[in-house]
Image (tube, rainbow, N blue to C red):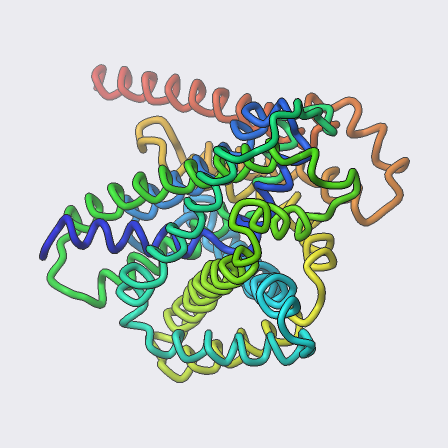
Length: 433
């Protein structure tokens, strides 16, 4: 095995599987709203859109199983329910959203066709890639990702060099919290537990790779892909900030992205952006659908029929949901993310921490407490805010939709101290015996 070549191909594939609709439309808009605070916002965004996802890939490198392995230490039932929810969310929201973004940015400026037609053709092509499962890493890593990277770097470089000199203002009150929450919308933490499994299975299909070789390859690829994501995100956020004065105060995410490409690449920028959006979104959709199909196939003892049926259903859902506009899909996703994202984050972190520091008790207690303290953030999107606000006000960082963070940290520390003390007592008892 050519290790360097495999690392680069896997790195490119990982980057491309992560970099989809949200990753493209969110950073420029975040920069536009943050103005002079773009660096602080970038730090927050990097936590949930880069660091946590890459930790998820590192956890996969260690576990080398499926998403089920992330939650099985809590309980088999919990892990099964968690996997079901994540795959349903992934195939119903972020995957279809890629078709919606593709229509609004890459198709609508040139053709008057309907969004339904776009999503139909789009997911027909996704289906073709999904059924050619064994070639996914090479197709995405060798051919699609380099083109995505070149266009992105062109937009960022020209934007920084040619931007207006005007000083930008910020439209947000808590930059780092805003960056963290916008990172939720990339779905990258969820993407990590989904596409990480895709990478593991893809490497298994190649055969003749040991556990340690796969661990090293996935770990190196994860860090390289993460570095690429950080550079691109920071560049897009900075570019959005630098061109803030060129947009109206009520500019939308799509308007900021399309405007940025036009300001940097001129009239041809619209064409370049169309190619970029189509490629970036397409690779992510393929990764999500393949991940879902892989999981269902494993549930049915390797049944290829189960894989094909899931692929058909996943693409049909993509066609239907993908025909709605981007803003609607983002609004629908937000309450769901406020509940499932914190749970995903703590599962990733717990699976990365060495086993000697994390007990079964810690897995169960931290996930339970995180779930409980995420409920107010979920409820405020589905019931009148005044009914939930008194509860949010008494939870530390509750007003920033981060009320689960401190309770989760305290719970982990208490579990560690308790388990450590219990182990010492058991050791003393054994020595006396």
